[in-house]
Image (cartoon, rainbow, N blue to C red):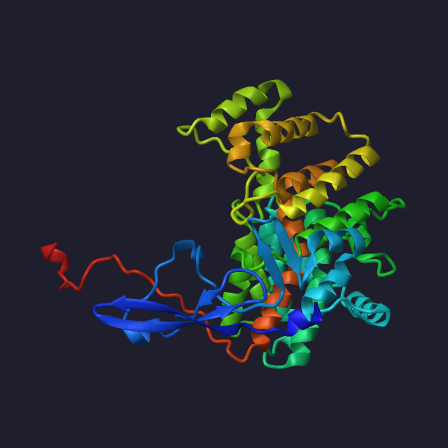
Length: 439
């Protein structure tokens, strides 16, 4: 694996040839360690006067990265060469964070030091309490999180120089450590309960759940089954290659913006229902169905091409096979429901029946609409007593390690330059201004 980590994209003997207006231009082809090869079209405009057009970046590699590899057809997700199920079953979130940031799993000494440095930054500045109070109690927690993450730049001036490697590292520790604290504060603020300070003798996921659910008036013990389930969810969501929010973080960072601003930009992108908000949409769908007896009617609407009804939590933009993260969470869901005695909870009954239909109905099977990670994570959060508005916030907590690793990789890249996509302009051609009285 270490040898693979060090391997760079290599030029092949093959070239892509483009002939346009009688002129032939060759473009080098690069091979990665795995996955599709790429044509280097960076000189396309200079050579031909043309750009490419690729709406949604369906066939465009925006960067070179060593962090995450996905094969959607085969249902593969790997962090730094490790299959996601191996990490979820055998590692923990902070160990995976070290892997994403540094390229290797830590040894015992390295892990102890990494955890110590994270724990050194779990508290947030006390004045942030006043920032939260500026929001209405009914605010969506993602709005609060975007503001709170960006505000960190106002408090930590000693880690804003993006050209200083030590400051970049300090920002990474601060963000991974403080995001759970901010998320728990957003939750507590929405419920009217007092903020709970981090307890650094706890594990990362355990501490997060304690800040979410404990109160000053009585002792609270975090259920270890739920803590482990949360840890797995954090690992599974830690990174996912160049998705919308990660690309947003990279694009914001390419301008030299400080890392806290970049994380806020990532949170805003993640908020979209087609991205991080998908697991919240799953619960909303289950509520709309309301009862198991109404599932056949709902499925009929889903199959009707003239209907706007969608089956949320099934299928994936990247995975054309079973989402490898969903496989891990399927067994985790059973553990959580068994521990909490919620097997017969009405909403969960609807979810289980939907899953059964989707895995057996030819309509869904032929379209490869398998349950994805959002389907199971939303149900697990629901079982834990986490309100649906907090689902995307938890996604942001998990994705922080991936965002900061991707940002750090970009900043360390000597080829990094400000992102500036091109466009196909279809507006008005040049025209003369007409004075107001003649229009």
